[in-house]
Image (tube, rainbow, N blue to C red):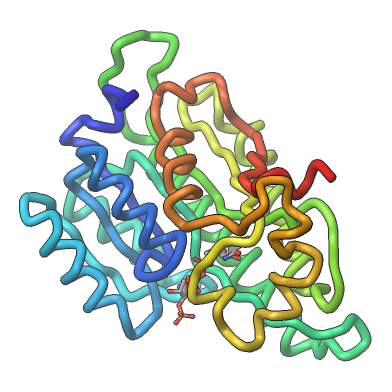
Length: 268
Ligand code: NAP
């Protein structure tokens, strides 16, 4: 069911890592549900072409691309400021930007550790902090039901590797455990003030990240389809649909949660 808040034409969505994979699928899912004001943030060179493609598919929507490195505090502040300058508020924020670099624990250089945690952990922290600061000062969205009203909703893309480990994943596993922790912390302090914060823990999802050569160790070992009860990997759209649900007022009693969307992998 499409929710009132999600289809509110005044809702503003922001997606980091929005030009590729799960982020791009989330942008499309918001647009398909009637959200017409979307900020796509990414540091990828494909940002411009991605925004052009979204705009072509949804000509009535206002879609803004903001080149952003989420590990850079000033750029994250500028990203949120751009959304608010352009659209006046921020209703849904989805933090997808992430990198996956693999190395055994003892081969994990300080540089590699800092790079991965800098984007995946520090980047999510910086984004959530700035998104919360904005959401907490804006009015509640219109709602069909006072109990469901919200000022905003945030969804962080963690990983099933935010709950356990596999080989050569030290930095990535650390960063994704941290995303789960800071999601709970942000939820604890801010849900009663009108901002719900949740995380999604995807299993193996078919995206450019998992297609890359270096991703073999990180994403395919132990998470291959034959070890997944559903018998296959997932598609970015299957994560995006949960993103939109968690942002909507139909998820009004869901906060501080980490949703496994993994074909059942984490249950075996
Ligand atoms: P993806 O297709 O590589 O998309 C990630 C996007 O984030 C890319 O456009 C990337 O740009 C961008 N990005 C990387 N570092 C950034 C930074 N510092 N600032 C801004 N943008 C940055 O990967 P994906 O599979 O959709 O992954 C999305 C999220 O899901 C990630 O957090 C990932 O860890 C998580 N996840 C993915 C899977 C999976 O199986 N695919 C499973 C569990 C969790 P570049 O392409 O230029 O690097």
